[in-house]
Length: 158
Image 1: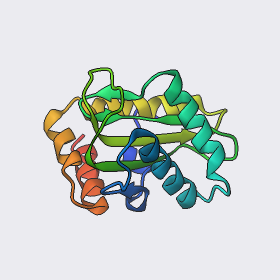
Image 2 (image 1 turned 30 degrees about the vertical axis):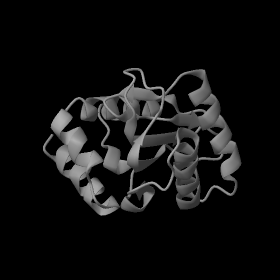
Image 3 (image 1 turned 90 degrees about the vertical axis):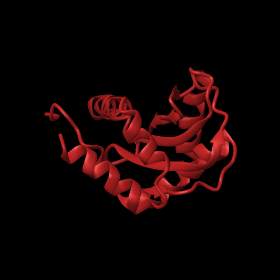
Image 4 (image 1 turned 45 degrees about the vertical axis):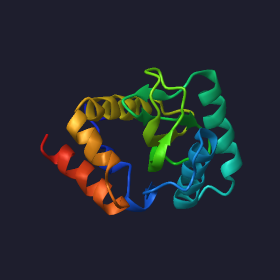
């Protein structure tokens, strides 16, 4: 049974956040986060996750607008839903649906057989991102700890 609402801080840790990303183009930014996530969750080979996330990206952009992208993929070998976040140094062209470049990238990876938590996380990210002032606070975070605590404070206010 999955709870009605999920807090992103339940699946995210400060060391799963990179501020700023080194990458300056879309594929490199996605792969940088995939590699970070793979290292932190103990995936022995990040290539498979790179492939599923990039194939999903090539099907349809995950640039959802307002400077945000949510690349995601499903892979066997993961214990559960996991997440990494990156803030770009400069906005990155992402072919986003609103035509604007991306500054905040939230990567989700989940086991193939766990659809519920994946959908809940996407819904929670969408909810979080409707608040423009909050979105801008995340984008302007100067460190991983600052981004994490900003997200945590937002979730705790309910």
